[in-house]
Image 1 (cartoon, rainbow over the protein chains, first blue to last red):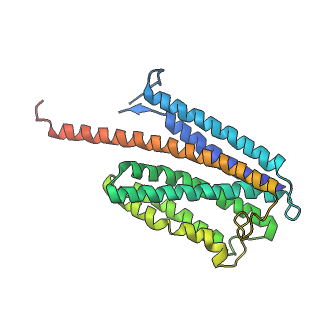
Image 2 (cartoon, rainbow over the protein chains, first blue to last red):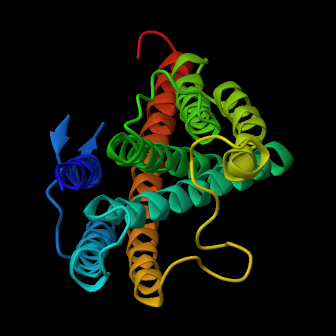
Image 3 (cartoon, rainbow over the protein chains, first blue to last red):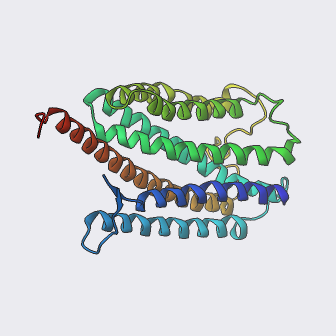
Length: 32
Length: 250
């Protein structure tokens, strides 16, 4: 059970972090 | 530089909101996949709870392969026709593919530890090794873009890596048949049909659909971010050229 939780915790952190970072980049707009 | 607040009539803001809404749908789909994995799918009699790693591990691998196929097609479109859309699509898909490869790799290592009491640093498993090579190849693809002089040179070099690097994708896929090492052979595409009960196959298909949606949304978001960067760079270059060509004293 520990390994199952560890495996999915890693996946959630990576995918969740990447999605959050992607959305931040999408909404962060500048003009030059 | 000043922040631009998105307005209700701003078409770029509307597109961003559409992509954000799609990201929300993808997150909801992933929650449904979570229910399928942890509630709907039966427990494996031999491996116990840790077998449930299979669903997201395999779905992420398929998503990564799909991304790298997009990198291949984008790279070919750039090399053949000079397609900037192809180059941008390749860039976006490489980022996303690398993330799904990381998820696949780490979940596989976590699964293997209790099943084989496996120390991955001592075992040159063919699937593990070829997947590690895949990660390095596409990290290299992104690194080339950063290190090469910007513009067409970086695009051409990255496109060559994108085409040659794809050779490793079938190597990863067939590694379990070509070399008999530790990784299990095909389960879903086993001869004579999937080698698992129907509810497990359904749970996998639900997870695969959710991961496919998330993957597509992420590629679309990164495509948009890259397109905006390209436009900003083009504006900056045009501004420099204008300055350089302006007559002195004005």
